[in-house]
Length: 267
Image (cartoon, rainbow, N blue to C red; front, side):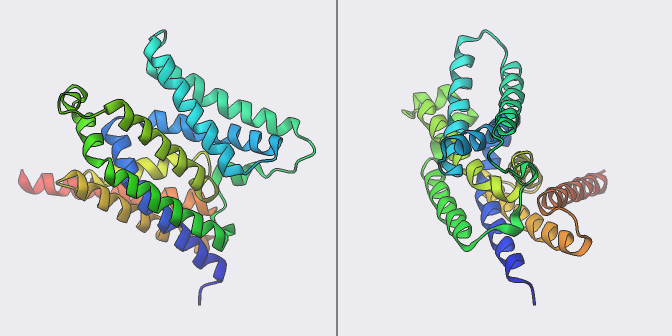
């Protein structure tokens, strides 16, 4: 019989994986991996500001992640620096600024490791409700925007010609990404959120024949990684968040072996 805290962690992790799967597909298709990394790194600054102003931590992380994405889009339009340079500056600056702010707040006791690498074993029933409630809203909005987002990913000019609004779709996608980062922070941590968005989607890409199938497979791969990572963490007494990411990486490597075998058979 599994302990109650482990069952809660398993349920919470699977709920998150189901949500990150489809979002991660768009990150892969749009080549936004570094962008997602920048948004997740900014989460620590959101934590620091939430502690300083004594507001809800999820709200703080969401606001900062959204602000960073807006700043990035604004700077990109000015074209004073390349996108990868801007991402590098914002990513490391926000993470460092968050750590410095936390260090200055000596009146607050903060476990930085839990923020950086997650603490899925401490999730409560309220956290589970938040994950599944927030995840359901994110997936519902993503399903509604699926066609315009997919069209603008393939060809932005063509999407405009068909009467769609790629800028609005992208803005909503940024909001959804900020919501997921805020929710996921407690489970896998600031430094590992991007891995859960990218690795399952990258694995699913090798097996899917349609965008919709890729989204479903990415969710399944993420759920499998959560299950394998948590049981591995329980058995080997390793950190839960990193163990989930290692499990996801292991599945990805197996997918590469499977692909190579199929290619050899064709030869």
